[in-house]
Length: 433
Ligand SMILES: *[C@@H]1O[C@H](CO)[C@@H](O)[C@H](O)[C@H]1NC(C)=O
Ligand SMILES: *[C@@H]1O[C@H](CO)[C@@H](O)[C@H](O)[C@H]1NC(C)=O
Ligand SMILES: *[C@@H]1O[C@H](CO)[C@@H](O)[C@H](O)[C@H]1NC(C)=O
Ligand SMILES: *[C@@H]1O[C@H](CO)[C@@H](O)[C@H](O)[C@H]1NC(C)=O
Ligand SMILES: *[C@@H]1O[C@H](CO)[C@@H](O)[C@H](O)[C@H]1NC(C)=O
Image (cartoon, rainbow, N blue to C red; front, side):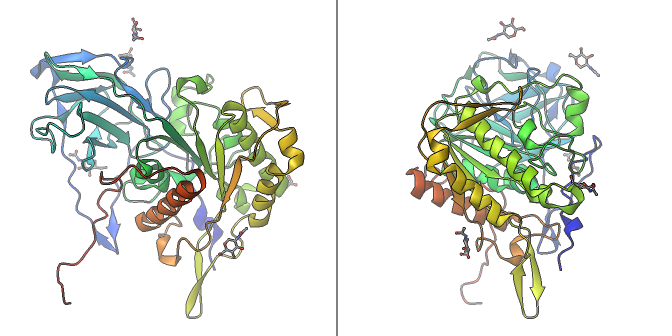
């Protein structure tokens, strides 16, 4: 049987970094992360401050341009063949980021706190191409949820410039825990289904407001001091880093900073479900309900997709079965049905996670809460030894969600070629073996 303590989904993160080994069917993957740090005084740059209107911030960033949650990023257009970034001293030293030009493959590099990194030069793949994506775009995303970067300045070559890239017209938000944030996937956030859903749909802005170990109920779970019913309304996550940087002055998230999400996908409860956190069914459903009412308050037109939970698999004789108690399967479904009842839709309720106030909208609503059944999407070997989706598991979840969203909301697939998941090219080179 599955040991539930195996799901201890680790909120306690330390500032010191440890290096990981990527395993492919038990074999060590060779990784090559170029060293991109440079001495800025040896270059002649045109420099932009972090609040330059040309820089578009993806996901949640605070007033000091520090990144939070899973796979936050920046994107901008540029001229010339040079892009460098100076990172502030609130950067986690050594944090791994992915970056790329246009829709080409992600390149990974370790970032130094207080350092300047040359990320695009004439040698960078794609640097010499003149199209078809015009102006050429640069995108960077942080791979790990617990570590972050602080943008101090963006540089291009002297005489060149940054160009503002308009944001895409549709938006997705993923709310969750370690399962959405890519814990134990090869490139973490950039290998997660949360990221893969947004990036895989294409032409979609997305944010992954997910953090390992977090409950939805507002209590300490695995060292995360608050639950999503509180934290989703704030800029920073529940990391130790947040307690150091924001201390007693957490920044409520300014929902006006970005347009409303059109679709919000939620996968939360695996940590609430864990006996170690002792969350009652009532407390779980109450908090989950308030998150949905919070979304409806902030973004009245958003469609909410509630995912059923999974725990993992156990071997039973000559096959495998899902862990019996997957987590409030019936209760989650009943909650979705309640949101869709005439009684509720006649008089819907909204919730504000900062003031903790609940009120009626006074406006009838059309059904906006949908159920996504995860049973049967992943099989036992799609969950890694540490109880989280492997890269393949994450790709399956993302792909099924994409198709669900296409069928339910008539969203077209626009990513028809760019890399989404990095280093997933497994094949054989013989025709007849
Ligand atoms: C990047 O960091 C990893 C540890 O996470 C280390 O193994 C590797 O040598 C570093 N690479 C460079 C180029 O500094
Ligand atoms: C950026 O910040 C600087 C210094 O705080 C300020 O003077 C400037 O007006 C800001 N620029 C924009 C575009 O907000
Ligand atoms: C971090 O940088 C800021 C601004 O550059 C500076 O005022 C501050 O002293 C620095 N803090 C540390 C710990 O180096
Ligand atoms: C779990 O919660 C219940 C009800 O809130 C409480 O009575 C009980 O003492 C708690 N158990 C633990 C181990 O914290
Ligand atoms: C979810 O899918 C499983 C497998 O197809 C099915 O047995 C179950 O009834 C479904 N749940 C709901 C609520 O539709």
